[in-house]
Image 1 (cartoon, rainbow, N blue to C red):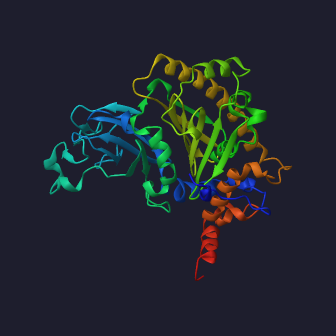
Image 2 (cartoon, rainbow, N blue to C red):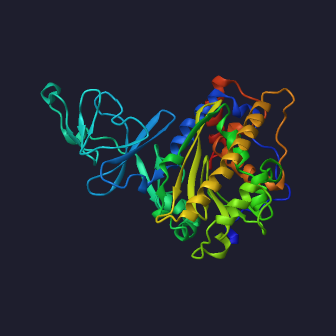
Amino acid sequence: MKAMDLVPVPNDWDRRGLPGWTYHSPAFFELERRELFLTHWQVAGHVNDIPAPGDWFAFDMLGERAVVMRGRDGLVRAFHNLCRHRGARVVDGTHGHCKGALVCPFHGWVYNLDGSLRGAARPETFGEMDRADFGLKPVEMEVFHGFVFLRFHPGPQPDLAALLAPFAADFAAYRSAELLPVRAADWDAELPVNWKSVRDVDNEGYHVAMAHPALQDLYGQDYRDLVLENGLSFSVGRFNPGPGRRPSVRAYLKHAPAQDRLPDRLQRAWTYYGLFPNQVIAFTPEGAQFYHDLPLSPGRTRLTGRLYRHPHESRQMRLARYLAQRIDRETSVEDRQLSIWSNESMRSSAFEAFHLSDLEWGLRAMHDRMRALFPVARLSAAPSEAGIAALNAEMICATSPGA
């Protein structure tokens, strides 16, 4: 990443964040569902989650559901997890394997592993029906250094390779395409907060020194948050000198493997690669993970992610991965409580607005991006719920070129 990719912090920048009403409004949440989450790339898994023909994993978000499957030809494809007959799920669960075909559990329609319809049950009862017209509907999918991304509706982001180009050299250095899943390390939890409250905590390192004693002991002396273009961010924590004061950190630093094949700036460090609006891919010397915050409603968010390891993992690397997970779990518990406190404060009559530090520039960059997509979020007072969508459309038209 080049210095010119970084967005400088202006001296006179507005230190207020999004208004509190945007965290609790059902109408604003519907705008986010329709015009943000369904139109932006979402990491769903890794190609090595499905190594064999017939292997699949599912990804559900805000009323849309997808299945990603490896075909007999070895290609990975994504489809809407929706039978073309009556809309039943053709697979159920988070992951699995089909020996030769997908069979809808409702009426027994059969689909090949490439999504084409092999046959309908009792086909003579459907009149003239061309099987070629009734294959599973594809979902837009791209793979970036092994990670599988989906987009349910066309949107403002460019193609994935162009969007994530600033990360390409680092992902290649980490050999992320070779990563293997640690299935037992998947996690899935719900938090009673708006998704933005989770992102607000994760998008800045200003709180690390106070809120995360283990991370402060691990890398607090050399931690940086960098904001890039197009909704990308990069954070790096280089390990502090010395053995560490906390037992968990001391044990981890003792076993964390050297990665001489990495460039100097990535060695002995934890790195975090963020993609607007809600996801992060993180690397440590012994493995990697992705995590994202999937909104369920204005006041509930699903936290989920998956851990990966390197091929030919040594006992030392496996132990370091276990110790890193222990530190990360502790940090996650701390962040969840901060998210709850922040979210509930916005219902208080005393809450006015955020007042952000220069060290919270990543949070401000996200809020600026939200205001650009949803001009109605520039209003400090909440509009009427019934008029939010129309008012937002009017404000977009008013700021469009030629308006």
